[in-house]
Image (tube, rainbow, N blue to C red; front, side):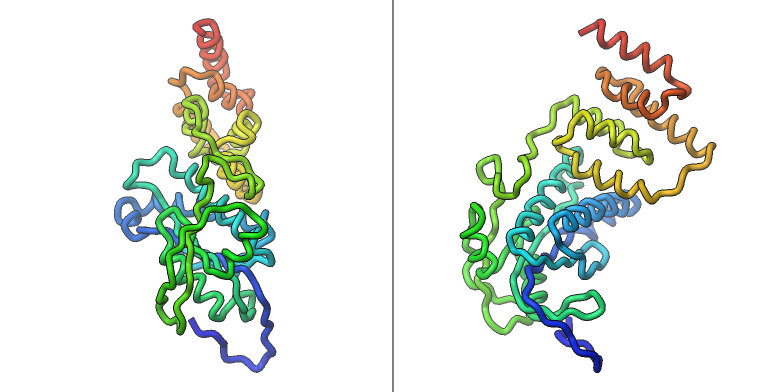
Length: 297
């Protein structure tokens, strides 16, 4: 990456917190199932983009399975990195180990050059190199970022020593930011994602392929701080701009929804169906299933 682009226009320089993230083993996942991997990457990017915006960050570059963002606050950047990894744990909750889509995140504080909404400079390069050194599912940060966080938040840091990073002139003192080491992390200003109950997982599995907003709204109403809440919110935001389905396609979607919930032993997926399709083809069956479940418990 060039530090300066060829232009006669004045460039803007500023100090920023830089977050760099990419998917570990992305090529392997594409080899296993290209269509599914692309769909999951789209879900992941929706969540990541939403969390970056919520923390006051700005996306400054993307490339396939990677994202680059800048923040005016190191504290907010670190909190966002933690929330991204926590949300991604939820996205991976129903997948086997070899199918999990795991992220590496690098975080640095440094001087950057801003041009055409993209950022350049050693500060960016260091963040990218730290991201490559992060453990899968983990966060690697520079000494300067660690120093900013020590006085403003309670994290645990593992010293990785002075690392020789590719194309970086001097060794960089790096640390692994261990988020949520004791089961909770109040400094991120978000609740710890507890293990989802079987009921919640069943509910989520019944709606996770949905293209309608009502299912995700029903999930969030039932589980406002649930394990999949960040994913549900991101999908809702994405669906707000989606075009309305034609009638024939809508019928197919309703049928797929019903097929996903009809064998459930929990009333909540049936209620989600009724909320979305109050005049649907399977209303009587849904009501009957809910009645049987309630009388048997």
